[in-house]
Image (cartoon, rainbow over the protein chains, first blue to last red):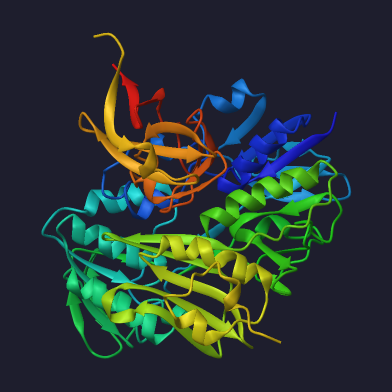
Length: 407
Length: 105
């Protein structure tokens, strides 16, 4: 009977374990550094942070599920090393877990700001439920919060804090929120949204130091502002958690490198989720994603391949970010673009912005355009050249063949 | 109170094949789907984040929530794809003189 060991009791890890069990695998062990049963992280910056849902509702499966389905969990203990010669995973308490296949689903850890005062009390990151609980304790209506970084986590936290009646100042080095990902036009529409909901926004400036006597009391910016506050939430990105690969010979570059089958350079060792930097055949490049759907789908696909299948993972990336009453969704993958085509109006907060390279739609972001996001997915998957005038024309259905550029 | 069929206020003509509509039945939002001429009724509220499933997409027997992509089988209410944590309730449905009725109680 084969032994499958999953390192990381994460969304990807739990999904892999469940998939392995469904597909009739032998022994399944899930090892996780956090003490909790695997849970979903999206609510941590939204409904859970605001106290609207319980932690139990964020669990991937009820805690008892794993034992009931003969999945062994080792929680609250980190795996520290993979011995690829003797084929075992070593835990921090020196225990060894033998394997036939391994899935690395260790996710990431928050980047920390390396500036004076960064270790004062009252400065929080947000990755785990423990982090979220600390922010919740500080989230008292009327208090003043500074949000450092207006990426997805920062933007969602700012929205949650406003909903709970806190005063929020947000600071980001870009010209707008999510400037690097979405560009100025889309970014500005998101900035407007936050300002309309009462967030004080400071762009093109960064934090120089945190000040306070034991507990943060103000944030000093490079631009010379002093922002008084009761606490700080920093959302400045994550680093993939790759330490488990140290000394193993497993290839690492911006995460654990995996091929289209989610396998590393070492036979039988796979990676999925935030930690995996995967070669994506459709986009012909390596892609590492830090989103829920990717963790779910890669986790399931890796599990399938751990059982000896060879299924190429070619899902189109997709994610959402709920802020205030707005539903933002993204589909596809882009880093740069030579043109942007917008259906709808950026200034009206209801649009689909398409990122184009060489006449092809690489990705699209929609504000309150969930239907369009679903409908443009096949167009992105097709990798075909598109008639950009028709793409911009809202009277042309996104499923229409007329969108394809004539040869 | 025993179960009974009650009017939904929706006529069969209001729900073309492949279509979804929402009805308000005694204060509950009910989605009605037409799958190739067969009607199905289920709670309109997604069990994930309370979005309307009638605003979603219907493909075969699968309804997909627009907000976050959860999928349900309209025949059984069963979750086919996350993030929905639990099934939606389904209702028996019948046609009476061109009008759709569902069983409640």
